[in-house]
Structures are given as structure tokens and as C-alpha cells.
Amino acid sequence: MSTRSSKSIRIRQITRNFQEESGTSAVEFALLSPIFILLLLGMVAYGIYFGAANSIQQIAADAARTAIAGLNQTERQTLVASFVTNNAGGYPFVDASKLTYQANDSTADGSQFVVSIQYDARNLPIWNLFPGIAMPGNTIKRQSTIRVGGI
Image 1 (cartoon, rainbow, N blue to C red):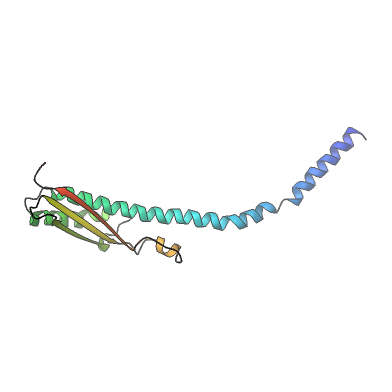
Image 2: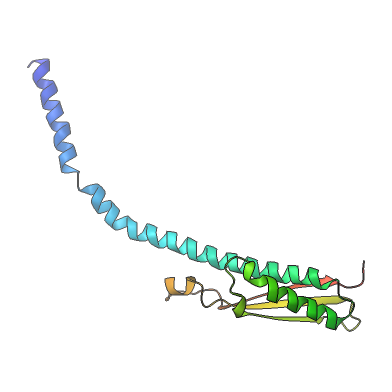
């Protein structure tokens, strides 16, 4: 057998192998793409939820830092209310109309001031993505505490 005919036979075998396997990548894609898309959407949805939780914590911390300028509990509560009203809508993934907050002294001597924020997170896309599995709570609750009156 000549080398030329053996090369042509080898090329035909390689070509035949490619022709026989041409549909496997489409089948693999059809099997794996729903799982990949589900994982991708899950990461995005949970990322939005964690981003909202982080924003709520940041609002509580910023409101508490704002309240430190108040001389008494009433003035601190007014500062917190003003901060939340004016600034909460600027945080990522937060709808300011779904926020509730409390701001009070936490001890009898008034040495600590606590800002608690609750956010109704039912409008986030995570709840529509996985209706059948365990999910985090619909309400995100965070708080921040500051010392009043110096060191």
C-alpha cells in the first residue's frame, strides 16, 4: 500500500469521526444549559438580596452616626428620621417606602443609642426564582449602636 492511499484512508476516518460526533455538543448544551442558567440566576438573585441586606446595615450605621450630634433622645430621633427620609433612597436595592425604623436609647442612663431598621424585601427577585426551597426571611432587620457622650 502506498503512503498516499494510507493518508487518504486516515483522513477519511478522521472526517467520519467528526461527522459521527457532530450532534454531541448540541445534546450536551441542551442538558447542561438549564442547570447553568439556573445557577447563574440564583447567584444574581442572592447577590441582590445580600446587597440589599448590606445597604440596610449601612443605612442603620449612617443614621446612628448622624444621631450622635443630638443632645438628647428626642433630638437624636429627629436626626435619624431626617437622615432616613432624605438618604435611604440612594442606597442600592432599597426602596425607601418599604423601610421602617426605630431610634431609642438602649440603656437607662442613656449611654447608648440604637437605630434599628426593618426592610420589607418581598419585592426582590429572589422570591420568584425558587418558590419550592427554603429562603431567607422576607424582612431584613439590622441595627447599629453608638455610645453617647464621648468615650
